[in-house]
Image (cartoon, rainbow, N blue to C red; front, side):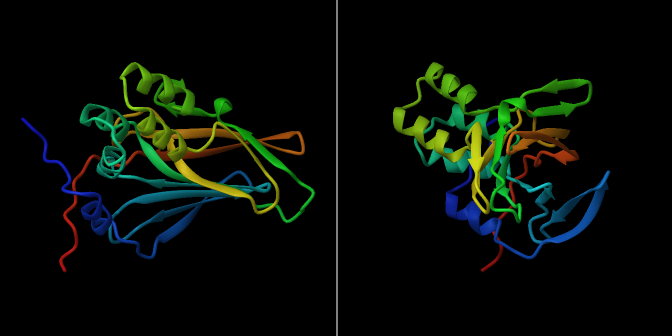
Length: 208
């Protein structure tokens, strides 16, 4: 049976209009993790800001990702792979108050823990090979690569990136994210528990 497709990106955007998040705080050791949920869409977010490292994860519905990449030239089967790979809108930032502290992070060191499995994230290098194997156009591959956070980043104070991250789990899955970063060469580790991939639901746009 053919699944209903979103009519356009504008429909997806309208259905997921921005609103104020409700949030509460979860304590992990001495670190505070802020959890939020958009009351209009039900999409959830997780925020870590500790030891000069700011990390924010916001759920993306699979339909958002499907529509985004279909409009950039991917075939429908490939957008289905991307859309159901647990994609988050993600921000990383050097939030230190000390301008001398440079922050770096290498996403190849990060791990996704789900049940009894521990795996790597799906990074730019993984997707590059997959899209080449699936013979997607060069312009589509470039659009996808630049939509994702870089595998390795380096930030001076207040530098940041927005981009997508993908975790290789089915919609609705739950996982813990183990991550690390470096400040002037010293390694720090963090963990956000009970992160949830967005469900594969298809909300209607709000009434006009």
